[in-house]
Length: 98
Image (cartoon, rainbow, N blue to C red; front, top):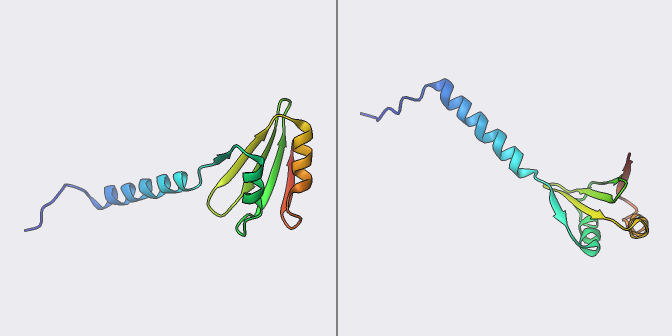
């Protein structure tokens, strides 16, 4: 006879939902990029969809959305941030956030 673990159908469905939710949470975790050169290479990738630029008092954050991850670069120098903004690929959608 098959061994019964005492799992009802409802418990199995709930467990599957939890596993699915956790896998989605971990699949789209953000990734931090430390170098401007690496960020530009990532922004030029075929799966890069858009770039969001968030200007704060102390820094500027560049976030590029690729198919799996959101890559973030934090720059504290405003002039470097402006140069990077000009260096972004022309076909990429750029959105400036407040």
